[in-house]
Length: 170
Image (cartoon, rainbow, N blue to C red; front, side, top):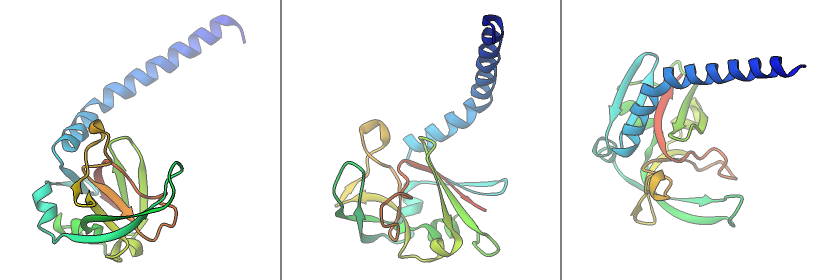
């Protein structure tokens, strides 16, 4: 390929990236606001409900153990405080009936799929907002919160999701 074709290809790619950034700026702003204000966006199709921290805490706090296992640390049991994912979906007014999965997204773009059956199991898929008695700090403060999805039956913590801002029922 000659140099002009390479320059044209790079130019086209830069324009495409610019268009996508422009199109997504409002979405990024909305999710950033939700993250900074400990809000959670819950979606089913085109319907969105925003829950705040008090809405979530009102569902009944649970303290539960879970083993944090990362690539840089040894497995260690932590005591998390949070609520079952199923209850958050119900609080938003949505049903898991006739659904296949729940998609959980973090502010950093990390996305986790949790099956309907895993979500219905209230001892498996939980949204935590505290660990060992301390509130989860947001990403910009070096934490993993304000919300973190904990999938307790995930042996290696691979489907845990930090910085949760959105839950989508599909």
